[in-house]
Image 1: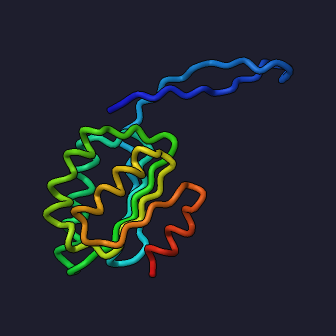
Image 2: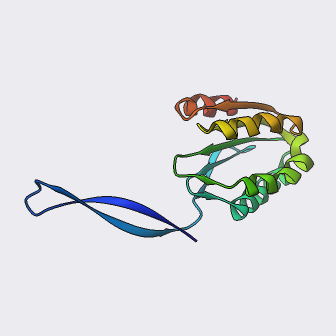
Image 3: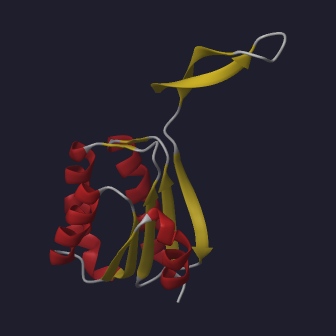
Length: 146
């Protein structure tokens, strides 16, 4: 479990002068599953994206692939996402093995290096891949849903 530090504004008794104090909170892996349609699997990364997150995603995708011949995949990272290159590299064999069973892949990120990696993944995914910025999030959801 990773720690993240949040700042919480605490006002003095007269509410005139803001004081800041730091609160350390334990945060579990923040990987949320998004339900868009039966054959679409989606995730929002809002914390560490590490080997545990990769395993969770691969397990859920494998479960969908047991039901459907092809699935579409939506993944979004937030400003709080802590993405490990090691985790991305760990996901490559699974993508190569299952890459021909993806229909569409929507990647929502503002990180340029992730956009580059997503473009490279086109080499081993037999899918239509589109990359969206966080401001284009709703467009990404509409695109992956059709």
